[in-house]
Length: 222
Image (cartoon, rainbow, N blue to C red; front, side, top):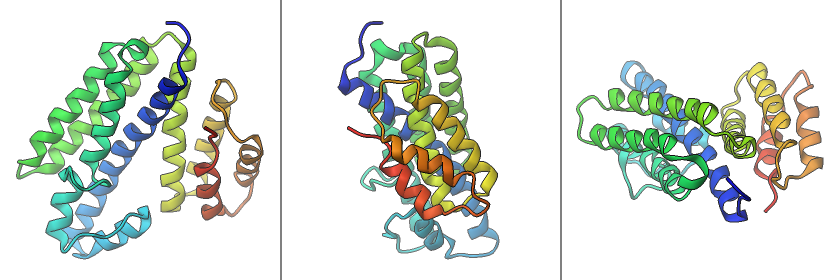
């Protein structure tokens, strides 16, 4: 593999972000679904607030249907999966065919879950395929820069979500260290001042979650 174009570096980055968004969103949805069934029928509204997405849903049933599989909802799991797929297909020369296969399997399982009476089963298969995709990225892609760019996208997306969800301090600190260790080894342009502040925030006893999200969202430079 030769020099990677700026356009494909961007696609690798967003492949990492969208694959992580699908994986974490599917996990969060499963947790929210259980709470809606067991305790709080309107838990979907809190779910939307946490992730900072518009609550366009009219009911629990509408949310459970559309958030999983509505191709016209830009925030649905399905829409984000298709964005990951679109980036992966263009990157065949950079990442090879085998990693793409697991994204394709995710799309297949997602489409099956759209007509299933047990959508969580399909979502679990999607999660498993995304995990397999990341494993194949580690195992099959020889170019370290390609691997790192995908993982930087993954870590930035995870930190963004963890910050919005106000995850425990240990989770935030772990992801900051993983991100910092990789981004400094790539040719991606990033804001060194923001990275330094992000690492400093991770040393504080009380995490400033809003600031973490703001720094992560502006860390990468075009």
